[in-house]
Image (cartoon, rainbow, N blue to C red; front, side, top):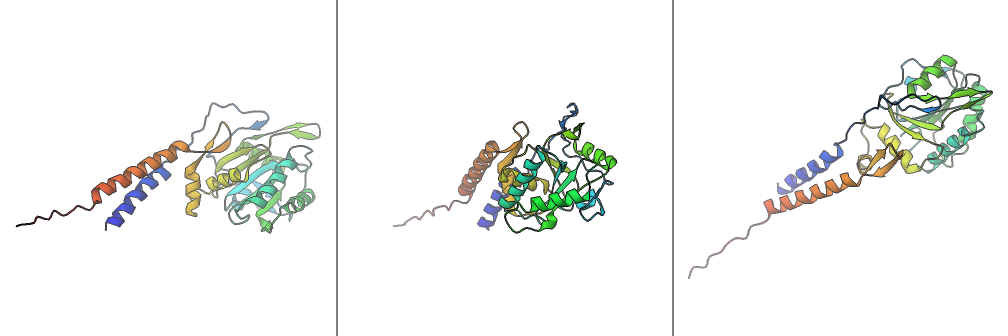
Length: 266
């Protein structure tokens, strides 16, 4: 009985801290940029966006998202940052212990309305070949679309680009999407650490049951919007350790065996 009470108290201490997340708030005063990213955290993708797959068939984007999804907008002829971005994604897939097609999927969409299925097929083959382990290749798909769907999709995620001559000025960003279509995180730049990527996927899967280690990782690390990376949450961990020791001391004092006083009568 004493052991059960002790476990209950300690579990309560850890649980209170694991669930003590403060929801992020969106700064509505942030102006939209002409080129770059306006983060639309906690917003949902539209239900009626349609893009063309490498099999030349139309697909509803929202219906494709049935697991944590890494969404990226590129254009396949890009002479600049698109190739390093997709190359790094292939490298991360090779290194992470998350399973492509099971734990997460990757959706790549061209924002150039002139690009068609043939080019999407070529790029898909190229980047899947860069992955250095056996994977479910259906977990990374490439799409093209018309100007209306491209505009609505990029506006929905805050991806701003500008046509200059035959090319585009744009940023390199991964958008993490939850299984129900909510934007949960942006990873900006062309290079990401496997750990940083994994944490973002874990965050996107929030709300669905998963291994305990995922919750522990989420608890130990938090996202720093200024530095745009995950950092060790020392304050939260220290607080939990202090509470844990306090609970142990409390239990020790309450359940400490009392010595029996034996009186020897002469």
